Length: 191
Image (cartoon, rainbow, N blue to C red):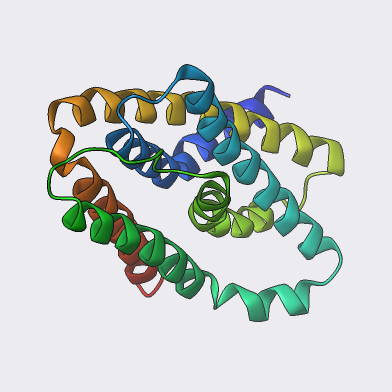
């Protein structure tokens, strides 16, 4: 049991880094975000960080040959999703030169896309936990979710703090971070 917790904790830290960066960008983009929305953002990332390893585990135990074909597309999907959202934030930040925030930056749909994009690489974690039984795999996924939640709340809080100080440029910086993360996922998948 202890080994499962440690493994889940370490996997959670590793998997949450992209979600942390996107949380930071969301906080930068919306410095007046309320605590409920902060928890909602962290919760969305935690949900997907738990769902994807379980989906990968399920694929290994059912349709492994189809999953292996899909695995090659993961970097392309992450690049497209994060590039689109980041590009949109960049465009809106450049277009809105006076720095006023017209509306909340991250809606539910964009948050779902961010959650999928930052956790899609966690599908392959299903390979590392493939020898676990379903309950152990679920426990590991829940530990990953808890670690991700805490890390993402911290990311949004840091982003909010910095976003308040750089108000007019926050959307541009947040969009650039998202585009960079998409490129990083894509480039590191080849090396």
